[in-house]
Each structure stands twice: as structure tokens, then as C-alpha cells.
Length: 507
Image (cartoon, rainbow, N blue to C red; front, side, top):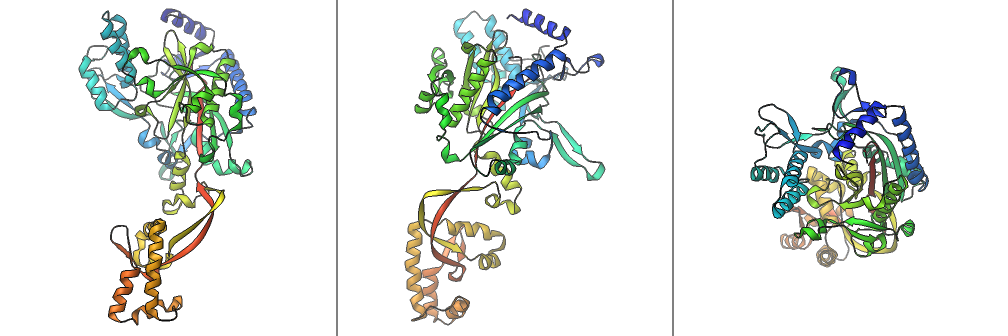
């Protein structure tokens, strides 16, 4: 499809009321749109297909959560700090542009017009590399190519712009700051405990949600591809982080051959070698191209879904995010991309291993003094083989009385003393206790017994039993115990794997 035929297709869609710009009789607002009767029917059919393929097939728990999100939720998730794009301002007209998109489009246009092969390839490579660049890297690229605004004016330096719509919930002084959700995931995360209970307390399980996401895009473009309000279909798969390769249903997709574009290949210097590999998902796991079977399963299921709704298999690839473009919450991320003749490779599904980022952050932000490990989001699982440990355990009341605000740090430091050092300390403590005589005094009489020692014995006792932690904090004999324990469980935050699709994309 050429640009002209694409424009004609969009005209037909609008004239047939598949979709139209919202509030068009008032001049419309970029990036928001209304669906007409046929558009609604298409969306309804699409979502039914999605539910049949994912939600029903894998017995997922579907929820519908509020789009209004209080600020503390998004502080915890990192969105208030990190959900930014860099923006350029035309210094004369004050027109605004999203920096990475403008620079990439500029370089692609230069590449199309360039006749020198080497220069053409350099333009194309730089255009590909813009996504994920830092402010300084973008400024260097703009200087290198003397990039100006469409009117030929100078640009400002790229400046961060947070993409969330903010609002107030409630009247006057009693109102609280909130945002329209930038993603549907957080509503699932904050309801994790209830979802776990709904699944009878067992992992793994997946939750699903369909709903609107809101992003205050700097320069919405390309029809329905980049919008400020759009439907999302989201899945969050929760699992024990030590069981990500224990996924029996991976067998159903392991023989699928898909195009994968790993970060390592994208970063090759030789442009001719920067091409996706065709590989079965079983081999992708075995060769560590994809980290684990849970991730591989969802790549396979997404591929099958795209084929089922009519996307040609040879136009589908899965591109791995490079480190400089990875979301703040992700350990590994793959985008399902569809090739279009007018827009090139177009992202339509994101599949991200979010590890335990979201749940651990919400645990920290919702517990007293940020003690995430006291949260119900922090789970336990039985160990196959119990572990016998000798540990130093602090006396909470005694340490709290002396060290106050540093008490938790000191308790944690004592608990993590290496086993060999604990055994050495046990030997020294046993030697020190001989100074009491034939019988070790009762706990309530310890302080009195130490005070009764001679000055020389008291000095020796302290040298043998005092522990220095956290740099310069001295923990004395009466503040700790050395105990033999048997550990029968391990503690963890569940791993979350996210798969989300924008229902509104023109893919």
C-alpha cells in the first residue's frame, strides 16, 4: 500500500464511519477518535477472538479496573518519574515535536533521497538507533546532520515530557492528585492478593483486562496508530521466579518457527548481518535467545493469534528491546511487529518479563516503614530439602532501645553474617562465657554478671563477643543470640510476564 492508497483507505474509513476524529464539528483534537457502528462491530469481534484465544484457552482471571489512578500507585510503579518522552520545540513557531520520531523521520527521508550507498546506509542506521537515545545522543545527532524544524527554524534542546494526563479526584482541599492510567497493568498488580485467592492461593496464574489507556502524546500521527486514548488488551502472568522453565504448555508451541530479532543481532556493525533469525521456540530457549519457557510460550501464542486474525506469517517478527530502550520495569522485552508498506515495521504487541518490579514496589509503598517483606505480596514456597542454618538473631527490643532508627538495618546486618563467621563467633562466645564460671547466668541477670567481672575479664569478654556492623555500630553480647534453625520455606515476590496489545492499531 503506497502513501496515496493509504490516505484513500483512511478517507473511505472515515466517510463510511468506521471511525472519525472525535469532536470533528468543533475542529477535532489530534490523537482521539470515535468508532462508528462498523468500527464497533470490528472491535467487538476482535476482542471476542482475543478472549477465546487467550482468556478462555488458559483459564485466565479477567478483571475491569478503574482508569483513574491515585498518584501514589504510579509513584510506586515508576511512571511519575520515568514515563517520559523527549520533546523538541520550534524556537520560532513554538510547534512541538516528539524528538525520536521527528529525527528518525527526517533521517529516513534523507536516506530515500540519498544516492550514495554508504551515506544512505548510515542514515538508515542512525534512524534505527534513535529510539532509546539519551538527550545528549540526540543533540549530537541533530548537530551532525544540522536538523531543523519543517519551517527551517532552530530547535530547542530535547526536554523530557511526562506522558500521563493528570487530574484531581474530589472537591477543593479534600481532592487528591491522580492520573488517567497510562497502562492497564497497575490495576491488576494492586489486586494481586485477591486474584491469588481467587486462584486458591496457587501459582502460576494469569489475569486479563481490556480497557482504555491514556497517553498525552506529544505529536499523535498516522491515523489510529499513535493515539492519546486507546483500547488495550492486557495479560499479566504470575509465576514463581524459580519455576519459569517449568511450563508444560510450552510443548504446544515449541515447534513453531518464528522470526526473532535479538538485540545482539540488531547491534552488529555489519548491516547485512542485521537480519532476524528463523528459529523454533524450542531452539530459541535451548540457545538462550529467549530466556525461559514462560516467555517463549507467550511469544508462540501471540504469533498464533496474529495469524488467526489474518496477518500473513511472513510479515510478523519479534524484535527484542535493546538495553537503551528497555522499559524501567523490564528484564527482557519482545515486540511483535507487523510489516506495512507505508509505515515499515509497526509494533502491535509488547511481551515483557517485568520480573518482580511492580509487586515489590507496591509492597514497599504500602507497608509500614517500607518493609516490603512484611507485605502479603511477599509469598513463600516449601523447600524440597530443608536447610540447616546457624544464624545471629538480634534481640529486637534491646537493639531498638539503643539504635532506634538504625535498628532494622542492624537486625538485617546480623541476620546476613556469613555462616563461617557465625561459627567463629560461636567459638569466641563459648570461650567468653567461661569467664562467668561454672554456670551461665540467666538472661535477666546477664548485665549484672558482666558488671561483676574484673576489669581485665570484662575487657576480654567484650573483645570476644562484641560485633561491629554497619560500619561503626557495636552490638554487645546481650543484644543477640546464636541459634540453629531449620529453614523449610523460601520467600519471593512473584514474577510477572506482561503481554499487551493496542486494539486500536491499524495493523
